[in-house]
Structure formats: C-alpha cells, structure tokens
Length: 410
Image 1 (cartoon, rainbow, N blue to C red):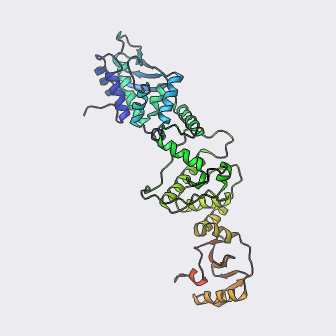
Image 2: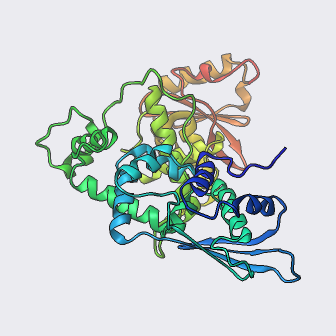
C-alpha cells in the first residue's frame, strides 16, 4: 500500500495546500513524495518560521535542506488569537491536543491563512539542483504533515508562536473578555460564563445588588441535576508550563486540584453532591484524602502550609469517608459524660449483639470491646471505631443504636 502523508485532518490539509496552493514546483513534488517514502529525510526539526532537515541523496554526504515559512506579524496574530478565543470549542480542542476544523475556516474569514499559500514557503537546499523547489525540499515539506499529525501546535509554531506563547495569549485574551463581561456576542459559552460570574456562587438567582466579594463568601446553593450528564468526569488537559517559582503548588499538585474540581463538578451535574467550596482547609484535605482512598486522586497537592503527616491524613480521610464533616467532628470530640441510663442501655445492646460482658468497658461516652470502640456523639449518633496500628479509626457510617453497628460476623 502506498504511504499516505497526513493521518489527521490538519495533516492532510497541509498536504492538500502544499500540492494545490503553495505554488511549489509540480515536477518536483512526485519525486519528493518518493524520497519521503524511502526514509531519506532525517533530523527533521520545526521551529518558528523554519523547517530544517538532512536529506540523503545520490552523493555521499547528506544535503542540508531548509524551508522558510512566513511568520505572522503582531496584527495577524491578534486576529488568530481572537478567532480561537471567540469559540470555547476551539480553545478546548487545542488544550486536548486536537485542532478544531473550524479554526482554519474562521481564521480564513478573518483574513488569515493558517495553511501554506502562495509565497508562504521558501525552500533552499545545499544540492546542485537549480530548481526553485528541489526534490529534497519537497520531501521535507511532505514529512511536515507527519510532524503536524503528532502535534497540531506545530502549525502555529511555524507561523511564529510556540505552544506556550499561544496558550499564554489565549488566556490573556479570554481574561480580557471576562473583564468586559464577555457580552460581545462572540460565543454563547462566553456569555453564559459571564452570567455565572456576575451571579456568583448562588447561580442565576443571586441578588444582582450583592457586592461580588460578599456573594462569593456565601455558601454555594444547590445545583439541579442535569438529565444528560456525562457517564464519567472529564480529564483536565496537561498544564502547558510549570507554575512560577514561589507558587503555592507544583505541577502534579495543580493537576490533582484540576482533576478534583472536574470530579466535583461532575457529581453536581448528576445531583450526587455539592461543590465543597464552603469547606475549611482541614475538611477539604480530609475529603481529598478520602477520594484518594477510594481510588480517585493519588497524591496530595503541595501547598505553602505544612501538610499533615501521612498517617494523620489517612486517619482523617477515613472519618470523612464514613461521615463527612460529622465524622471529623466525632473524631475530634473530647470524651464527655452522657446520662448514665443512656450508657447502661447501650452496654446492654452491645451484650445482646453477642459481646461477652467480661470484655466490655464503659468510659464516659465510649464503650470499648476487643478491637472496637463505640462512641456516642453529642449530636446523638453512635459511631464504630476499630483499632489499626494502635490508633482508633472510624470504621463505618453512624447509627442510631449501638447494636446497629454489629454485623452477624462482628
């Protein structure tokens, strides 16, 4: 089977533009395809405004081949960035390593041609061929399609902006739209986002007269479930650059926080949870730890505050797993003295569950037996603790009665 160049739509679009609009020598293109298929091109590199490669020809030494690509001026780049930022789908696709087909069409409508056009490519080669485009340069042009298959950002790199530079300009542009409330009609997603930002965490029903700082300080309201919510949470795109020195998080920690935010948003869409935005730092750390125990995020993000040790994190994560904030409260609650009648009835219930009276001790609000301890919280719930590594850990959700905390095997 004859090798085709370009397996993505943008790689194929590059080849199509190369053959139909770039005005390269049509007599050299077929021979260039043959050279490319024969693996004669090595050391292919793409950088802003230039493609360079080494090509094996008929002589002993390889030829050095360069393709100069016209780069955009600042005004043209401003149009490119505005075109991509105007549609949330364009930006989201790029962050996911994809290129939305609409980007090329939208840019063309704005007067910018992303794919090579007449005069955009200027080949030069160390070979003796006097043609404007030699077969070595043509081979290099074809293999650019494979590089674009692997990384669509290279299309922008050739035009003068690296991936990091383009993403930074996109973030700056969309922040600018946000500062202007994004009421420019460019994108319904942007308008919806502007409405949510203006409304604060209470949603569209928030009082428009509330000061933004006060609105964000209020606990977030409930979010109705979405009928067609996705089956699983999305995965954040890789962060394009490391956080600046002195940031209160590192790159893995930032990915963990983004993943966690996606999971929380997903549970809200399904109507299974809340945003957890009103939690204290301690409670939120316990919540993330419980997610880690249940197979979610696998590390705790670095912060500028001294983190708890690993054992203490697990201790509190277990309490959160079985009782959320109430689990943390009973974990931190100091011993207290309930009415004697309540503890006597509780002891009797434990005995009826099959525990020998000789191994039961009662102290304040705690009933202790072999490997377990039951605690009565001030809220009136009973909690089962079990000892692991000489530490009492919350072992199950709360119950109204002590005997509810014993299974037939306990």
